Length: 359
Image 1 (cartoon, rainbow, N blue to C red):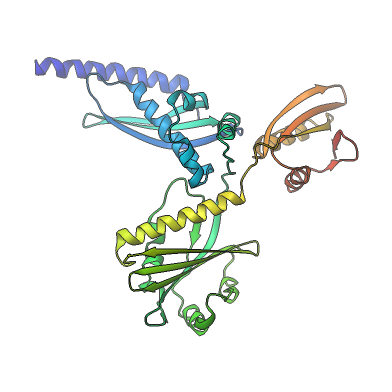
Image 2 (image 1 turned 180 degrees about the horizontal axis):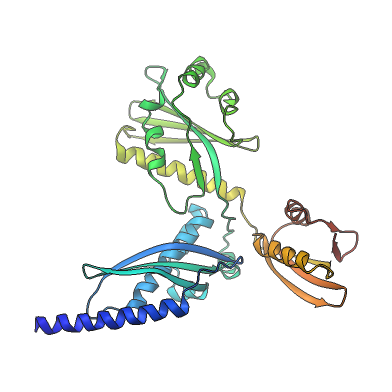
């Protein structure tokens, strides 16, 4: 009986991988749609059994991919509002998906998916939940964590700082911020020590100017027995924001507790960056723009720019004639924001009349 079951499993395996190959051939795609969110390398595994159902594995991949997308574009507080989403709602937002890789090892099936979510449908879903998403912009920060022993009134070198040593160990695929840590420079340490008495007011420019990055996060960690107090000085384009947190009954030298502190701080920084890039999808500004059709290459580049601009909710060609093409653009922001965004790519407009003209 056991031998017959093995034969059945082997036959099912053959049919399964034959169909799998056909599915990959017909349905896989590597083309990225500029009006979609792409979530790549979603990995799922399940034991291969007689009642194995590949569709259920793919469904698990859809759920995992959606959670990763939400982690990327929604701040941590708002993520709690969408814990109970149904599978059919997720599927309704999927534009297409691809099977990047699949394999069978030790009677376990492994699959890696790439998923494209329709941006407009995702925005509509979030708007109904009263959630404003963020543009998923990657960002580099100079990050300087300074550990201060309040009992000894002393500042510890980076080599003795567990937050410094472990900060980049705990990474998530949906993190937008990349942290550039300084080297253990004795000159910098001595410079900070000389400003120890006023360290909470010190602006650290004498140190940050040595690096090419303009934006920085200075983390002051005040260690006192089993209590940790932290002050984060976040500097973006010379705008400084201060954030305070406290952690009680923690040993910062224990890896599990250092990890907890690091993850909480990273969530705070990710949320701050997301809020800096938030899209107010309830604002739908209608812009009407006329473009001369004498230069086909110019038109194609203009449309490409419209597709790639995150704040553009949608755009349409309303009419055209032998001289001009007329566009209607739906924009999630103000006129000035649109002009600034497009101006950064050298697209400027004559705005004297209601119908704007691309120069």
